[in-house]
Image (cartoon, rainbow, N blue to C red):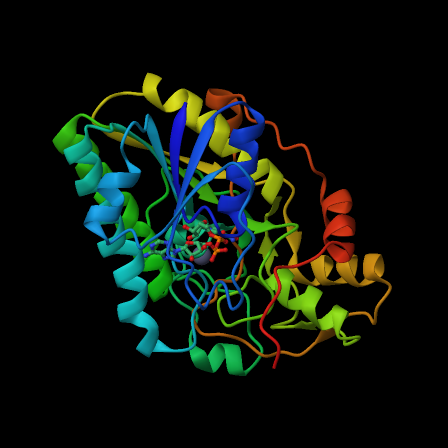
Length: 353
Ligand SMILES: NC(=O)c1ccc[n+]([C@@H]2O[C@H](COP(=O)([O-])OP(=O)(O)OC[C@H]3O[C@@H](n4cnc5c(N)ncnc54)[C@H](O)[C@@H]3O)[C@@H](O)[C@H]2O)c1
Ligand SMILES: [Zn+2]
């Protein structure tokens, strides 16, 4: 199978390219090599076609799609960014970019798409109130966060809530610009599928970590920030009280999920997008993750700072049962093994200074 991997030079994309090549497929990389993601140019895997272009470049996309069986769309600006001034860049890369890619696929007659979705589309995770059952707490008030009240309360009675695993059918509730663009990508892909008879799978990744993760930039994931602190001999600084629950999933398992989805997408219902949570199924707190990395690295233990970011949610963990049942996916890397490896393995280099 010849597969166009957009964002194939990135953290997850490069693992997908390696996984596809190892399975005997022919990955073609198209990547704009965004300076925010690649302060120094990435190394190019031998024998892989490599197109340095933006997904919004119509001619480059048309050329890249020639002879392609399916597209694996990873290209995006990631993370929370520095401030709202980043919004046009996020929308441009992620949404205009996706629309341009889908228009190119339509013209080229390519009908199979696997999209890098995200758990950020859900906002807060699933919560139950002892009195009111399933409830959907809204964004946390800045005053609560400043006062150290991190747990969202029941929107009806204020009671403490019990966090659970969210399913794909949960209502979307994006809480920041990046999340809004990831949800719009899914909506665009669904509209494209309906209009063209295409088939789309969105893998809603949880917190992906592992070798090759970019170092600390405003766009990096939390595991990377902790890993960078440890590399400098500093303690990982854990925001809030460290009790935020997440699902840390290894990049090798995410690459394997993409390979499975690419093999299965042509058998899916034409004209529709299906979404699959992609998480390890082994939720941990951010504090636990920091402690595991510090222990494996042999550095100072985490410091809980009480700081917070307004766009962050308290708990988000999902059930990946559908991905296991329908695509036969089995994550292979345990939390302990993955964090030990990550504590010692390299991150993507950054420019000096
Ligand atoms: N890392 C995570 O935990 C995580 C979680 C959920 C979803 N995702 C999604 O996974 C995908 C890959 O993320 P990543 O963590 O590997 O990030 P990354 O920044 O390492 O990779 C993204 C790649 O896309 C490229 N890119 C960005 N905009 C582009 C454009 N307009 N045209 C062409 N290339 C462009 C970048 O140069 C980069 O190489 C993204 O779609 C992201 O939203 C990541
Ligand atoms: Zn209640």
